[in-house]
Image 1 (cartoon, rainbow, N blue to C red):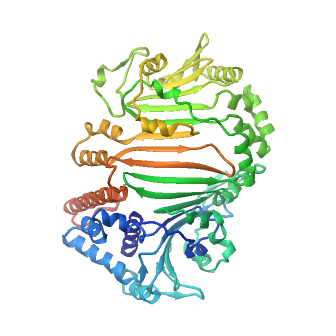
Image 2 (tube, helix red, strand yellow):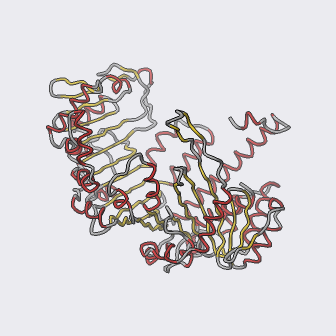
Image 3 (cartoon, rainbow, N blue to C red):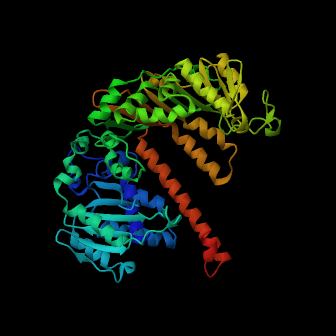
Length: 576
């Protein structure tokens, strides 16, 4: 990527770090097409107070990232040149949006654009023209905007309000010719013309073709936050044409499903709150088959004091049948399953709908790996961690049908009324036990035995457990415990990075509710070790330290290459 784009994107990263969105509908929405896949919005103007209270400003960030040697001084000067002389309003909102399109030949194109506000369009044009790497590139004028194509996959376009930098890729896949029985490559795409057409649409589209016409998008700015995201399921609809057969009502089920999220940097934590909005058809299915809440008893007696992660889910299995009915394919699926001896109902009724996944002791090798032996399987293996996947049985008759079929295929073996791993599954090291009550997959037999005995008590923070109650899904990661398990196995600079990260992060808690009305709400929270400091200040300090380490490492590698290959690294080495 050229120097301008590197510096422009660096500004975007810093802007994202010190950003928030004002409590109003953005004028930029009219430039973003409705079929966009996702949008990320940040505003540098809102977060400066939080950073300044923590003793961080733009000069502080630059000083941390750019040191005082000649290479850094040159890049810092160019960075400042863009900041001061490119005519861009760095205090205004910055939008990143992307969309993927399926072409008539089933190839796909991806467009990623970054949009900012302009203070002086003439100043931007002057800045671009004086760049050495853009010599010979012509600034062209259209009725509604000006543009400069830097290469066949990148262009910069602007009017008096906005500047948009776009990266475009058209991925061509070989197509199999059934008559010739060979793969044929597509004709080379004119990516420059395709990219120009996409960008032209941004500046000329009608308001009704843009996100300014989507109330869910414009409405999310009513809630004060430090950042916003928006996703749409509409971008995937065109890809349905790639399927060998069309599923009735699938497009109707996917159309006009949106999600929004707000991001806030609070003291001691980063909080994201999301809401998924469904169309009427999908909403009716989710309402009809709303599930229960997670079963915490499934993790209470997990045999470890060093839990790394937990996933809990509770749902109504009948929802799968409801979706098949709405798509009008239940009969088709059942006809296909008849050949193996069961129905779609057997599949989704076999389990109750409660699932628990617990992982612990990652990276802990307290004993000699050569002496570690699974008592029942008599297999020696290096312990990497422990795991339990537990799922209570639903309809016993349906469950038995499916498990017996697995026995016939050699996947499982049956001992009286109990199913265990067999053949390849056993060779892979998975310990499986299933009966008429539970299906359990464990990392080893000892962990399984201890879990079933129920004599242990898992160590999970009470405040985290309280957050799990009444939720339909739960995702939890104890970052500090996980990093601590690996620190003693690491060395050098990597060990230093792990130690720094352990001192920064505490854990991650993500939960979601059951579907209610027309939406489904969820939250995602990263908790910091320092509960009193604003999380943005904490995160910015960590990221700038990482950026410095990466720059130093890259420079050392470059210097080493120059010593070994004074004339430049040979192409065959560089590409492998």
